[in-house]
Amino acid sequence: MIANYARRSQQSTPLSASLTLRYKLKGGSEGTSWDEISPSSAEAMDPDAVAKAFVEHYYRTFDSNRAALGGLYQDASMLTFEGDKIQGAAAIVAKLTSLPFQQCAHAITTVDCQPSGPAGGMLVFVSGSLHVGGESHALKFSQMFQLMPTPQGSFYVLNDIFRLNYA
Amino acid sequence: MDPDAVAKAFVEHYYRTFDSNRQALGGLYQDGSMLTFEGDKIQGAAAIVAKLTSLPFQQCAHAISTVDCQPSGPPGGVLVFVSGSLQLGGEQHSLKFSQMFHLIPTPQGSFYVLNDIFRLNYA
Image (spheres, chains in turn cyan, brown):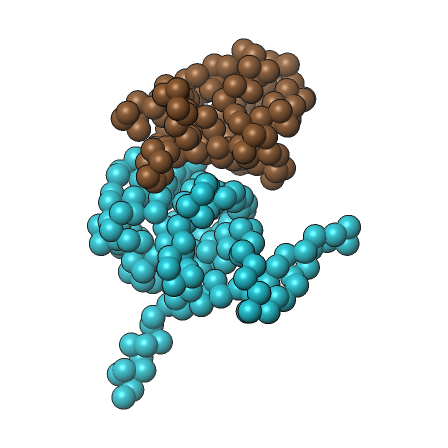
């Protein structure tokens, strides 16, 4: 029983839990606030909220348990990582877990998003820095994702492109 | 069409046009096009061109370091991810930037920019 509990606690929170957002961002001269909307109202989810939730989930998972990122990709997913092109969740996870470091910490500077077309997709454009365990200098990076909706009401990553930004 | 070829041709055309005649970029956008420029959100070709032509410099020269692309889904769209530097006329130091485009095919066999996001990469 204790072994089962330990295994469960290592699983990352599924993205769908982060994305069961029932809030709408309301803007005003005083700033923005979250207005809770009832689950029964069929409001479309706010793209900025989806992007924010996704980014937090993605980098938290990356920095704590890269193997768990597999749940965010599907067979058709594509990753281009520093020019290397990889397709499919399994190959993508293999690439990310084989990167030559144990610890990694991302710090996000900017997140921009836009809806990507009639299929309900969303583009997310991130810039920030990352610290690899043992290294004294942080590396700057940019990354873009296209998120596509799943029938279960969550999102998966169809497109993922990562580049370091060298000085 | 090969996404890599589309991306390469587009990037060359876009930055050459930007650096020589920003006004002419309007032809690359449509009413549904979206630009997020350093966090400012703009929609539609006219507003996008107004934004780009109002940027506070006369001369600009982009130098492209990397271009990555991937197909974006069934309608034949292409995602293009660019990084590079840009030099503004009169400025001593160049600025680093990243930019992404989502290109959608037109019935005439060309592409237009549906999504455009630009960010400077500060040191």
